[in-house]
Image (tube, rainbow, N blue to C red; front, side):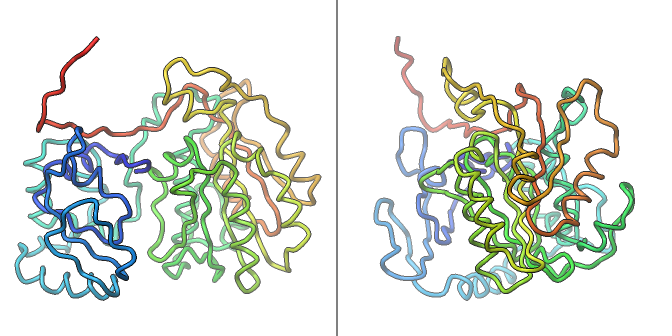
Length: 367
């Protein structure tokens, strides 16, 4: 999740009923440790890379300073001797265990964890978040369907696969575990807004994929600048995927010119814009908010004006065909240079955000 809130109800349930929090380089532990009154109710062991990163706001049972990766490896070895053995891995599930797919009560969630069911997810390549794809206006594209297709290419596909595959074809194994379709390492740059929630819910990236986002400042328009910089900072050919909303992209869209001016042969900047014609996070997050409606430009025409290419999907008079999203993502992932994918989504569709249920205090109802 983002903004201190978990994306899934099961995650919120696990955190709120935990008996100990191991904090690995977390800057703000408030939501992990405290009740709704801001009082620490769960003990913590904190792990930080150096003493300057230690935050004294909350009490820690122990503070471990050093290489966090080494600490995690050592901790895993110690825990392996005390946790329950994993269940038989011979039968890999076609769907995630129930605690990933659906909310449940805390007792059953912890039982599944102790049983070792989560270990079967090691080779699972599906979605960890199941959107209600049956319950939306099919004139529009759904963010989950687009991002899940991008997931597939980052894990298994290459540019060559994307250029030749049919909409229904499965890409051959070709990734190397870092989102490197065809040997090109991909950096993901995520913008600020409702798109932050969709990305955290729907992107299930390969191990080692670098993700850039404006966590603390929440800067709209950040992702395009970050994507340009990430591409040019790597040896050519390099690729970055920018995921932004129609509000954020308009704050820095002129930086497409920077990429077009400085790109090298084989470099790729894929800009995916989810357009709901509004500032969704403000409109959905604040009751009575005003001035959230947006009328944006023809983004594909702008990309072409900056020397790139692009396509638009969704927002027409007729419902989308079953393979339209697959074809669009295949074309986008096969592209080099600047390519913009303008995805028109339903303005009434908002990303799920779970809430912590706090039974430790009773708040007075005033007013």
